[in-house]
Image (cartoon, rainbow, N blue to C red; front, side, top):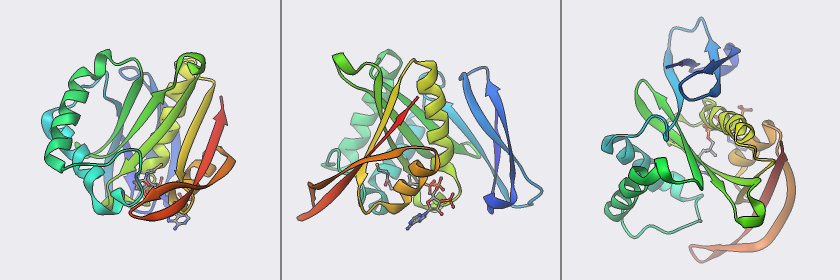
Length: 208
Ligand SMILES: CC(C)(COP(=O)(O)OP(=O)(O)OC[C@H]1O[C@@H](n2cnc3c(N)ncnc32)[C@H](O)[C@@H]1OP(=O)(O)O)[C@@H](O)C(=O)NCCC(=O)NCCS
């Protein structure tokens, strides 16, 4: 299993790339002289199935108020129901051809994850990305690593076009995807109504 060192100050680190034979993903490896580092590994949950405790960590991230603020694909009835739904989802994941899940682990604990969803019949070459990182770890490059790994995985799967939809005011997300090469396709005005407020939605794409 490949691991990568994440510096508390990632700008002080230099990067190399390695291929993980288990997940077939190209992973960045940070080499740093900093003392305060945590280990980060990016794993494909289809090839490294999650324990119930790990699924609970994912629900904890999704239900965190600072994360919820930015999500709008679905509403949670309760974190208990969410946990049950996620456990069922992850048990069935190895046979689910529509989606791949990458998880980011720091010192063995899941701190972020990414879903790469395939689209419909005439869009089998298109996939969309959703990503969440636990707020304690924001700003350390975790989402950047997950998205770069997802781009590599998408290429391996023959995906030709990636898409991201996000609230237009989600500046951290917009910054990350622009940094890795996504282009803004459109701003859909007032497309999302969340918590009684209208929001514009930013749509990004990346041709592979
Ligand atoms: C968006 C999110 C996934 C980013 O995760 P992350 O691990 O913190 O991302 P990274 O550390 O890789 O990169 C964050 C970048 O945004 C920058 N950033 C942080 N706050 C910012 C802001 N208000 N405006 C612009 N850029 C900002 C950081 O400086 C960093 O850029 P840099 O690497 O060039 O310095 C995380 O904030 C999150 O989980 N948000 C809630 C869920 C969500 O919004 N998901 C996306 C829905 S489509």
